[in-house]
Image (cartoon, rainbow, N blue to C red; front, side, top):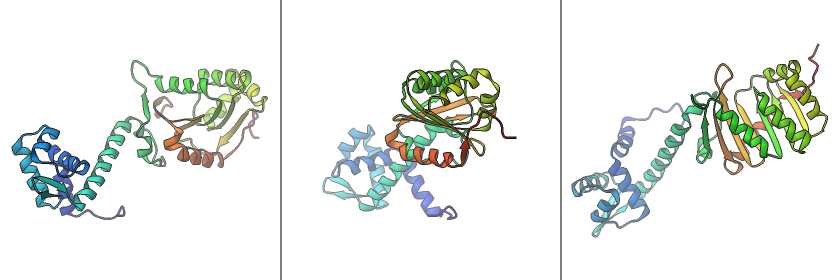
Length: 270
């Protein structure tokens, strides 16, 4: 179904039928997992009254999702298909709802499949801990040997950790940065001197992105981080996950942005 298709009323009613009753949906799921369940089995599994279970089984049978089979009930092929699709929808809604504090700050071009972030940990900037996303980023920097970052802002603590890891401890870092980071590196001695030292090791590569950096993306060994900031550049949320789920997207996205960048120079272009 394409985005321009109008969903007709009967389909909406079918969706509402299943979503409008906890008992109906869970009865269908229970029969999907184990056919031949009796009303008594379903009462025990759903913790619902005999009347409620019976009424909902009758409704499911009427719509062809469930069929009577001896003393029990079995899910039909149509029921199997709808139950699987509905379960996927429920999972997607659950993931999107949980990640909403991050998604609200991300642009439309953020194109990751949210299902790949199902197991991701969400770290939020809260009133009692406004720098929680930054602190999680720094903790990952302290551990990682191979770091690639796509960043639009930076902070002194993170820069100090990066300097120590690259210059003193032999880590390899590669950054694609936005214009605000470039201005900071060229104008602030707290960043300029460590940057020059890192570049001098041959283990630090820095390039400048041609455009606005829409969000933070970090690939730190086997860890993937995605972060968002508000209009004032303050970090608002970060998700952290391992490379198994979202690794391909992260690699492809980083390489795409790196391909749109140019080598950094400490001297501004004339």
